[in-house]
Image (cartoon, rainbow, N blue to C red; front, side):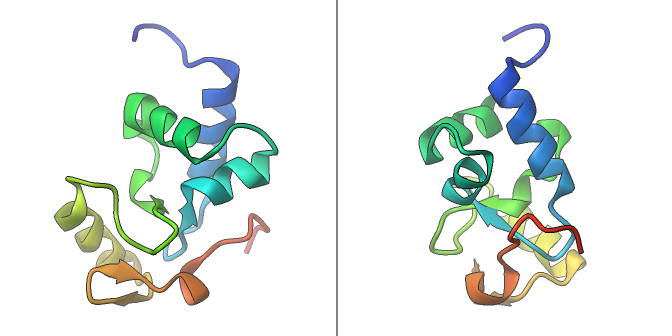
Length: 101
């Protein structure tokens, strides 16, 4: 895809860009916060346009990283101090509610 992301993608990317270091949101959290789309639509935006935002902060609801990006995601989580157990973020501690810290 060329050019500028569509409006929904812009809103997703803006929110992802605001997730603080050490925090995460699930794909569904992002959709729920925005009040539009769903986890799959958010995942599509991230796969297509997410390279310029902290993509490692948007994960599956079970705390697992995006498929194929596990090692890079874990490295970034450790650098940022994201609460992790094994190879998953601890959602209870790491989930961001969208309220600025």
